[in-house]
Image (cartoon, rainbow, N blue to C red; front, side):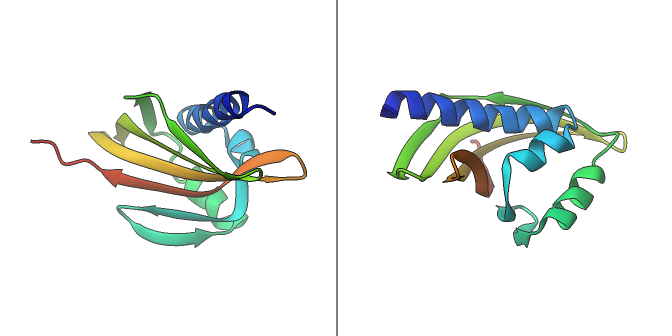
Length: 130
């Protein structure tokens, strides 16, 4: 597969992952995740197994999230089966009657096993503006 085609595929998968989060689509999120998945963000660094991921995902039922990519993601192919993707994102969230907005830089590492790409690592770093 040509690099441009692979880059397009990986960006589409990253956006599909975000749609699954916004739509509370656990099935798709699980299909796109390689377990245990490493996740870092404002709540620390965690190696998350499928059961814990499902519990975390389900704990957000009733909340809403809208995500907007602020730039075209950058993809680096580390080898034929590992790729890193990075981009800026804006998200608006509402949970328990509280609204919150966040500008951040996100990155994911995708690995290909048996021809299928899955996210093995995701990190989110809030941007400080001004």
